Image (cartoon, rainbow, N blue to C red; front, side):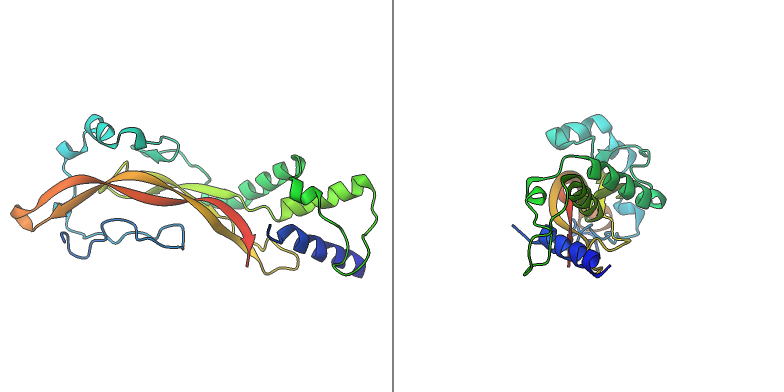
Length: 218
């Protein structure tokens, strides 16, 4: 049992070794290393909401232009991407699928055995099973859910990514799936300047960061 634990511990180490307007309004998501983006606190006065004539889809699509990405944004309420209650099942299915896929080159080169000891001799089939299991166990998929940004964004629905973090992804436990890469999508943001009847409102483009890759890390 001690030898098996040492094998898994060392294998895991080898695998993970690196090669002026609305009051109180935040106009756009604040730059941050912490993703996903926290909810924006909006001014509650509906006077700062766009009116029906400001929500003409044809006009807004033209204004957003090529930035409109139907894969990550929607005008109407979309269907579930990964329902939160099914995140564990989605992660397990993704990991299982990954375990059956072709191993990456860096994993195929992994030496099994203790760091300072001799190389562990195992059969080709057993070695592949161990490496596939490690690859699946340490897999950190991006799980997507649709988020309603509110009427002051267009499109108002965004498909936001999260890292599955309900269990440790390392052996021994202690490391978790965390964001390592992100992409930005351009949305339209309803922005008002001035007060009451003197205010001027218009749609402006803003960038919204989204998690695009997760990795097992400390």
